[in-house]
Amino acid sequence: EFDELCFEFGLELDEITSEKDIISKEKGEEKAKGASDVVLYKIDVPANRYDLLCLEGLVRGLQVFKERISLPRFEKIIPAEGEGQRLIITEQTAQIRPHAVAAVLRNITFTKDRYDSFIDLQEKLHQNICRKRALVAIGTHDLDTITGPFTFTAKAPSEIKFKPLNQSQEYTASQIMDLYRTDSHLRHYLHLIENKPRYPVIYDSNGVVLSMPPIINGDHTKITLNTRNVFIECTGTDITKAKIVLDVIVTMFSEYCEKPFTVEAVEVVYPNGKTHIYPVSTAFGYLCVLRERVSFTQIWQDETPSSLAKLLTRMCLKSHVTGNGNHLEVEIPPTRADIIHACDIVEDAAIAYGYNNIQMVIPKTYTIANQLPLNKLTELLRLDLAAAGFTEALTFALCSQEDIADKLGMDISATNAVLIANPKTAEFQVARTTLLPGLLKTIAANRKMPLPLKLFEISDIVVKDPNTDVGARNYRHLCAIYYNKSPGFEIIHGLLDRVMQVLEVPPNEENGYAIKAAEGTAFFPGRCAEVFAKGQSIGKLGVVHPDVITKFELTMPCSVLEINIEPFM
Image 1 (cartoon, helix red, strand yellow):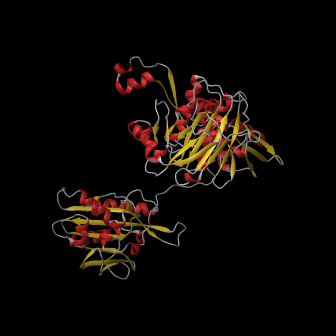
Image 2: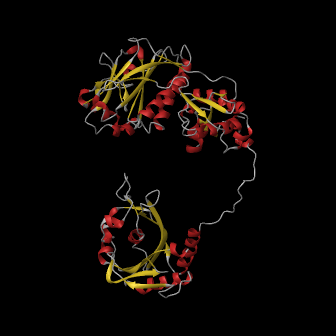
Image 3: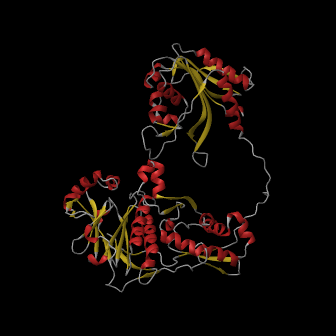
């Protein structure tokens, strides 16, 4: 029954298990003795629904979906001037973590389960939207143990000293980094700031350290089951993500406040003197008006506007009919950061309607699927090249600048290559403009195989083209290589003749194919020919230059053929 409910709501019940069953499967029944038998429900949540990552949000969403409770209305309380909390950001944070947002949950009541869920949500957010604390780091503090206003600054590691969470003594920031270098949980976050000249830190007005984001909170502000007022701060490098994280935390746990679903705003002062009130979103801060009835789903055609409004309200998107009765006004709550376009609203309406309830209809446009002609030609050529005794290779579409330029005796500017803006490794800097380097590297990795090595590949190469909408164009190339103690030019030439034979292209200059002597930086002088077919140059064949062979760490001569097969379609 719960599995059905999850499916209807757009979730997936992955597994029903227990701690004992998990340990038993992984380590055997002996190790599982004494483990808990409490039933665990593993639920897959879509990556965009951060509001469903804790029990509070999941239960609330399902209850509203089942129409057992009405949609909660969130309220942002702005304290009287001089009474609210302030977070002051100094200019020293600009190079490390320039953004911070904050809020206060007043008169909250924690139990053991609520506290565990509160900590668990923070950890899930850290791993998801916060990108392992790289974009946002969350800090939660007992407000009654500290005094505002708070200062978010950055100092040299030797100047920061405080008692970290659950530790018994004070450490400097440098000592804290050494302390957690072996910690299984926190060591994964040290690299975010350890090489910086200054570390981010948050103080209260008395100099008490709240936290050193994104590593650890101070022990002084530790939250317990007796905590009544919670100060939440989110620091990071992405202000949009920080706002979303703050919204999720306060909307999930404000239901435990004395006045449910209320959050106290905090004033954040930026280095330039500008102030912002957070959280930004109030109860329903955003409006999205569907100007016309969207016709790309059956639901929008079959349902009345009032029934659509009811469907959307079940998905926590309070809606009502406006205008002449064909317009819907949809209010987006702060829990739904995933709603950024009318398409998202249509999707939620479809989920509430039930995908299984959508009737199957024959498409208005009747078409028969067919293989792309270029791919069909590629498949046919692959079979014939294999039949000719060559082995197919599949190499990376990305390579280094050296592979397509320096190693082939060319300048990178002459290759017309598409460069990657922020390559992760030196091996993947550009999109390949030729298949030859990939095959040469394949041979270099298989030098222990018996000779001769006969390889081929039919794949796309990429070159810049200002006339296309994306600024680049793909070409389907065929490349074959023969590697042996002698160059074997006649074998590669024979392969070209065989390819042309199966393509039914006769050997003549007028309407067939021909080869003419040419020069190429990758080829041995006097051992290179250009291939012409149907009146245009389609590629080259020849003996590879000894310098090229040496640069790819090979020791034997080889011959190569590379042509563009698109003219033969």
